[in-house]
Image 1 (tube, rainbow, N blue to C red):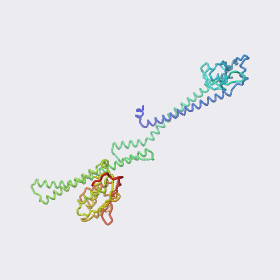
Image 2: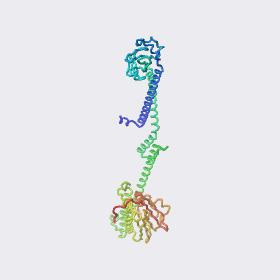
Image 3: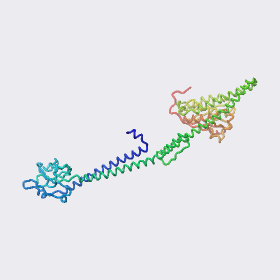
Image 4: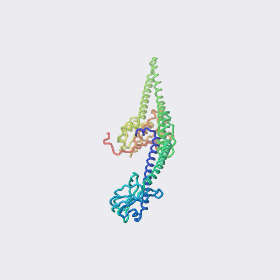
Length: 467
């Protein structure tokens, strides 16, 4: 049954649930109404029986001098419209009908009233014909027994039957109306879900990520629509970035490959024609080939670094000593700029991150500082309270170029003649962000560029730091 219910469409399930809930509520209300009306009718019948008590002198008319009761004269339906039955009951349990056509069975409750153990009693009893009666038994003065007055329960049952029919019709109409209302509510309430489903199917069929769903309100459907729009926007942006990366990578790879092809064709033609290239030109060609292969290798390495997913990049996250990573990056930078003067002031600072990725990022920043520093210039490095500053004394970055420095493959006009892929600072920004930090490049006072890297500290230092 549960599997069949789950197999139904969501609209049908909602309509069925609404109809079931209304049916249960209507059934409960109808049952309570029926019980209340029945209790009120029985109370009304009891009041009628109690208010029509016979006076002692009226009851004793039906008792002869020997104590035996005698039946009253026959009465017509006009005289006894409620088909009442009156019996006299003595203490020995003997009874006789003084009014009515059929005797009522004697119960223990009647005997308790007749022998004085109870003052009165209301209860149900069966006549000799099998018909149910409502009975009121009470004692009278001057008679050693009790009077039993009874009226058929059909007075109550007939009214309850009519009420049951009315309640059944009303309940049935209510359930049908609730089912129709539930279907309408389900259709209206699920219209946004239909729109969302249509949009998802459209995206899956056409891969069109420009689809947006109108958002109206602040309910759960609106939140779902907002989330879907944000997801498609993020996917569209990611696809655009991916396409841009492929286009930029193809453009960047084309230049060194073209140069390599030209140089290799010159060398090959020299071998094929037997015309020797002058030694100096040959050495220059081979040096150019080597430089372009190095550039290609660096570009491919940068592309691999950028293509690595964030989850994979964070697999080696641990508490590391940032000051020691900076010191190691400085040692490598000194090898690339032996004519430059490096000054450093490094206070201990521990962070959570990938040690190799952080060192690569810092080497990239220092490489830029070395690249743009004039011969004999200086590079100042400082680390205090999680703020790492790297300042060079080069020409600086023009203000109009600052917003683009972290874009992939972007290179300022002044740097296009210098070696590099244009991916270094993109890798730096990504690595710093993965470690929970931020990086800013700004003009330095007095000239040059100042890089400010902020990284949050770790709760505890690592158990052992490298020498």
